[in-house]
Length: 107
Picture (cartoon, helix red, strand yellow):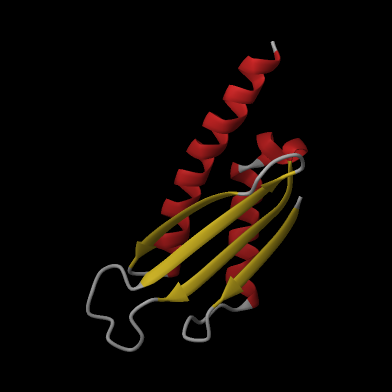
Protein backbone atom coordinates (compact mmCIF):
# COMPACT_ATOMS: atom_id res chain seq x y z
CA UNK A 1 0.00 0.00 0.00
CA UNK A 2 1.49 3.30 -1.13
CA UNK A 3 1.14 6.40 1.05
CA UNK A 4 1.17 9.97 -0.21
CA UNK A 5 0.96 13.04 2.04
CA UNK A 6 0.27 16.49 0.57
CA UNK A 7 -0.10 19.87 2.25
CA UNK A 8 -1.24 23.22 0.96
CA UNK A 9 1.31 26.02 0.86
CA UNK A 10 -0.10 27.57 4.07
CA UNK A 11 0.23 24.37 6.13
CA UNK A 12 3.63 23.60 7.59
CA UNK A 13 3.95 19.92 6.62
CA UNK A 14 7.49 18.71 7.13
CA UNK A 15 9.03 15.25 6.72
CA UNK A 16 8.55 14.51 10.42
CA UNK A 17 4.81 15.16 10.17
CA UNK A 18 4.57 12.98 7.06
CA UNK A 19 6.43 10.13 8.77
CA UNK A 20 4.17 10.42 11.83
CA UNK A 21 1.00 10.24 9.76
CA UNK A 22 2.29 7.40 7.59
CA UNK A 23 3.06 5.31 10.68
CA UNK A 24 -0.33 6.08 12.14
CA UNK A 25 -2.16 5.19 8.91
CA UNK A 26 -0.27 1.95 8.41
CA UNK A 27 -1.15 0.85 11.96
CA UNK A 28 -4.85 1.75 11.67
CA UNK A 29 -5.30 0.37 8.15
CA UNK A 30 -3.21 -2.81 8.51
CA UNK A 31 -6.25 -5.11 8.21
CA UNK A 32 -7.24 -3.44 4.92
CA UNK A 33 -3.73 -3.62 3.45
CA UNK A 34 -4.45 -6.52 1.03
CA UNK A 35 -7.33 -4.53 -0.45
CA UNK A 36 -5.82 -1.05 -0.76
CA UNK A 37 -3.32 0.04 -3.36
CA UNK A 38 -2.85 3.62 -2.18
CA UNK A 39 -3.74 6.17 0.48
CA UNK A 40 -3.57 9.89 -0.28
CA UNK A 41 -3.83 12.54 2.42
CA UNK A 42 -4.41 16.20 1.55
CA UNK A 43 -4.20 18.84 4.27
CA UNK A 44 -4.97 22.48 3.55
CA UNK A 45 -5.71 25.74 5.31
CA UNK A 46 -9.29 26.77 4.52
CA UNK A 47 -9.39 30.21 6.07
CA UNK A 48 -6.01 31.67 5.17
CA UNK A 49 -4.48 33.93 7.73
CA UNK A 50 -7.65 34.59 9.74
CA UNK A 51 -7.33 31.58 12.07
CA UNK A 52 -10.44 32.72 13.90
CA UNK A 53 -12.48 29.53 13.76
CA UNK A 54 -11.92 26.09 15.21
CA UNK A 55 -12.09 24.48 11.78
CA UNK A 56 -9.45 26.27 9.72
CA UNK A 57 -7.60 23.13 8.63
CA UNK A 58 -9.20 20.56 6.33
CA UNK A 59 -7.97 17.01 5.82
CA UNK A 60 -9.21 14.88 2.93
CA UNK A 61 -8.19 11.23 2.76
CA UNK A 62 -8.65 9.07 -0.31
CA UNK A 63 -8.29 5.29 -0.13
CA UNK A 64 -7.95 3.47 -3.42
CA UNK A 65 -9.04 -0.16 -3.40
CA UNK A 66 -7.49 -2.47 -5.99
CA UNK A 67 -10.84 -3.28 -7.62
CA UNK A 68 -13.21 -0.48 -6.89
CA UNK A 69 -13.92 3.20 -6.75
CA UNK A 70 -11.90 5.44 -4.42
CA UNK A 71 -13.36 6.05 -0.97
CA UNK A 72 -12.94 9.43 0.69
CA UNK A 73 -13.36 10.92 4.13
CA UNK A 74 -12.74 14.46 5.31
CA UNK A 75 -12.97 16.67 8.35
CA UNK A 76 -12.01 20.12 9.57
CA UNK A 77 -10.33 21.09 12.82
CA UNK A 78 -7.98 23.63 14.37
CA UNK A 79 -4.80 21.63 13.73
CA UNK A 80 -3.62 19.21 11.05
CA UNK A 81 -3.33 16.43 13.64
CA UNK A 82 -6.95 16.82 14.76
CA UNK A 83 -8.30 17.10 11.21
CA UNK A 84 -6.38 14.06 9.97
CA UNK A 85 -7.29 12.04 13.07
CA UNK A 86 -11.01 12.71 12.65
CA UNK A 87 -10.91 12.02 8.91
CA UNK A 88 -9.04 8.78 9.56
CA UNK A 89 -11.76 7.63 11.98
CA UNK A 90 -14.39 8.32 9.32
CA UNK A 91 -12.35 6.48 6.69
CA UNK A 92 -11.97 3.37 8.86
CA UNK A 93 -15.75 3.31 9.42
CA UNK A 94 -16.35 3.70 5.68
CA UNK A 95 -13.87 0.92 4.85
CA UNK A 96 -15.48 -1.36 7.45
CA UNK A 97 -18.90 -0.73 5.92
CA UNK A 98 -17.75 -1.13 2.34
CA UNK A 99 -15.59 -4.20 2.75
CA UNK A 100 -17.98 -5.76 5.25
CA UNK A 101 -20.77 -5.54 2.69
CA UNK A 102 -18.51 -6.98 -0.01
CA UNK A 103 -17.61 -9.91 2.26
CA UNK A 104 -21.27 -10.62 3.03
CA UNK A 105 -22.19 -10.61 -0.68
CA UNK A 106 -19.38 -13.08 -1.52
CA UNK A 107 -20.58 -15.68 0.99
